[in-house]
Image (tube, rainbow, N blue to C red):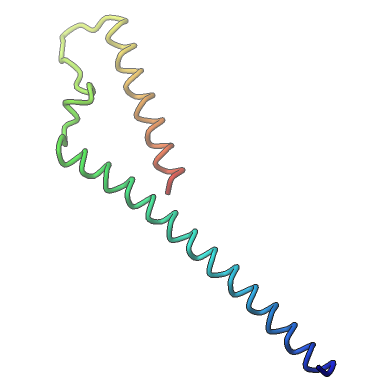
Length: 92
């Protein structure tokens, strides 16, 4: 093989390796997207099944007077929801 032919083959090999890497990265991006969509679908299905979050314990009993325990429960619910939102945002 002549030097110019060898250089051409090496360039083709480098180009093929780069193409392979790009395809691998695209596959990973699509997998990540699929995982995010699956997560969102699950959240939407849960919401559709219980739009008022009655089964999640988020309902707060209405009272004329609230105790410290009531406020702690409300605070716990709010913190849980904030953490869930952060996790959803990270997944997106």
